[in-house]
Each structure stands twice: as structure tokens, then as C-alpha cells.
Image 1: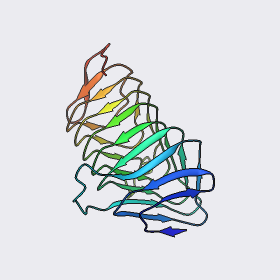
Image 2: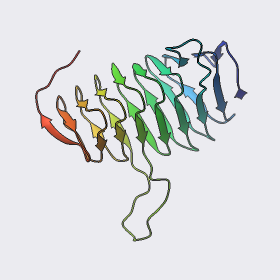
Image 3: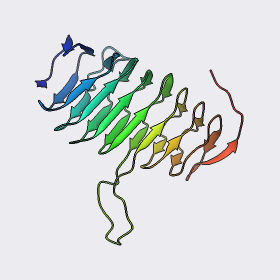
Image 4: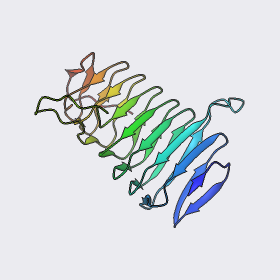
Length: 193
């Protein structure tokens, strides 16, 4: 299915809402599963013509478990044989997701503008020890601040807060605040709403 429309569509029995200026490319062997609803291209400024893009490669999977909003200008790519799983929450504008293996995002997750989440380096380093791809897991009720970057192989625990501009290269424990380049935990037992 190759879609570039401004409509609500039903893909199988899954509800996908494409807003104006959405560009969607779903390979015919890709699958969309789950019982949720995804809205692609939410706009803060209705006059903006910034395009929101989502691409699902061969035999890829998009699983949507709850209600998830994808803000305008975002670019989501799920490559061949990869899986992106979304719980509930939202991506604000201009978020970039690059999924070559597996990215799982939990329930009640808030992801601010210009965030990048990648499970791949895209290129290999030839040294015998390098892994080009590694799963990313973002737990429930996680807040990721503006322009943060989440790198491959990272697990972010439930209730964690990632500060604006941080680069996360290692696991972040639950209910902690992590900031910096690379991100480090500066506070434990944090709560947010």
C-alpha cells in the first residue's frame, strides 16, 4: 500500500488517522497490529505545510497498543524486518525514529520536539566486536526532553526523565533524571506529571 492522503483509513482493523501533509509509504508485506489508534501529523500551526512521514519496509511491523499521536514534521522509518511498538502518548513535532531492529515505547510517554531515537548506527565498524543494531526500550510514563538523542541498545526505566539536549548511550534506571552528553543520572526517586 502506498498512501499519500488526508483521510482516516482503516488498515485491516486498525485505525490510522492521517492529517493534512502526511506522507505514508507502507510496503505491502508490512503489518500493523495492536488494538490502538495512531494519528499521524498532528499540527500545532494549521497553516504550516511541514510534511510528516512514516515508512514501513518489507516484513516490518508497527504495533500500536493505545492512542498515540505523531506530531507534524516527524519522520518515522521502520526498515525491513524491524518492529516499532507504541504504547500510548505522543511524539511532538520533528521527532525522528530510525528503527532497523526493535524499538518499544511504553504507555503514557511524552516525547518533546526534535528528539531522535535510533536502534542502529547505520554503518558498521570493522573490528569484530561492533554491533550495528541493538534494541531500544522506553518504559511507561517516560518524559524525553527537547533535542534529546536516544541511541541503540538503551533501556529507559519507567518514570524516568531525560533532560533536554541529552544523549543517552547507556541504560537509565526507573524514576531517575538523566542529563548531559553523555547522559548521566543526577537524581533518583523523581516523579513527574
